[in-house]
Length: 183
Image (tube, rainbow, N blue to C red; front, side, top):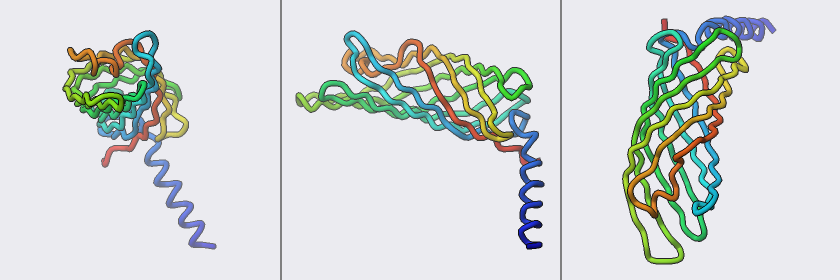
């Protein structure tokens, strides 16, 4: 019984050390976002994008990092997949449990198009950028759920490959873990 109490005390002390972490200088950010884009008009396919990310707070409430956007677009017997690298900067505003979030990012993606209906296959690289405004709600001292409304441009000059881009307004939902600095 004493070992269990000691273990519980140790866990409480460790978690208390994390309580000041969130968005302070030196803290780390690990998590990701997901985007579901359902096309209309000429782009009637469905696109799913997952973007794992890592970052570090270089100042209180200011994080720099990178994400690895991975996407799959399916439309009428064809698929387009992409992988990219997207450095980002994030600013957090407020001190409440729910904070305003502003994010800017630039990067590139490598796109591969494959069609089951023809022998046409193609590859391309595209420059990407985006700017988003949203909120993060801390469900605990270290875990935040976020929603981000962003304008993204991930098009390219290839009309076939451009079908799978996320250019326009997108809704991103994310889950982030905030780790304290090693001070």
